[in-house]
Image (cartoon, rainbow over the protein chains, first blue to last red):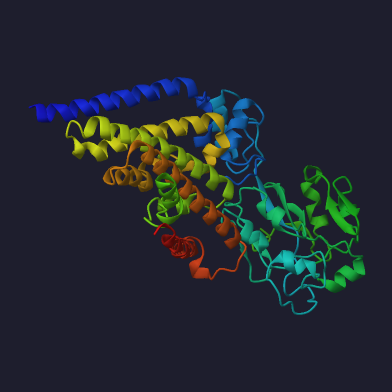
Length: 269
Length: 191
């Protein structure tokens, strides 16, 4: 009987000793943490992409609880996550406009003139340093830096040399926008259906010579809708898409190079 | 002189990572950045030093006199687990970023075989109290040395052209093997 009792008592005593030590230490070293942080952190997508402007989902959750960020600050989670976060905080979520990335270039292999053969590191950043593969120095080079930057599998490189964006998967995190050395990608509200598909600031005749689908700054679209479209640096720019009258869309679509207009289903994202 | 020999032996010759190949988990897991490797090394050194002392006390004052040698492993685990909890609370209090950086490897010190190995090897060799203290501290320093060297090499490796199939854990294990061979050269020091 003693043989059995001695080890049991010894271990119990040791365990008790250490646990009381830990309890004392815990009282001294306890870290107060708002339970909301944990809850909000769980409600977030855990992509840790940094699109909210914080270093990760956890940092965003802490910022929201401290009041340094809005409940709808997570662009990846969209409305659903914003509602959940707001519910945890006990505030209204505020409206979220779903955005997606769009490609502002229609310089396909077919439309754009090539400058020459590029042999080198096949990334856009590297190619851009030596002027790119196309004659147009504003257009997409098609090496897919944006596709590699996408964490959500929402992009792929199309056969025509332009990236394709899958609206349903795009979370508007903006990684592709940062990755593109030529600033061809931009985030737009999903509902915005009129876009300028060109970034070329070359003068009209040159732009047309280099790419069939380039904006030549003829001004047809500006005359159709002067409130919302202006010409800047030989390029049509939509200043406020909400002011575009739907009835005027056919007039805008008279664009001779089709560099402004509605999205097509095929490959403009 | 004897004590110095024990210290040098623990740091270089019978290094826990590179001679016994114990504690490989944090050695590979936390050796990506020198900063966190140093912190991990210090955390392990702290746990090792205290474990050596406490487990020596338990072993020589309780277990051996009452003929309870078979409780060695379970009581050492108790010591280690409690100490790791303590270290975890402490690090969380003083440095949340460090707590984040060490991540799961911090509580995993509990199951780090280097520390269990330390307690058992010290008991097996029947070291005296002062010898055990030196041995525990030296082993911790040895672990820190190994993991910091490894982190330095891996920071360089990130910039080098590693063959595709060897990237990540593969090249890390090869480096660990070469380091172990190099540390074998220290064996001549003690004879």
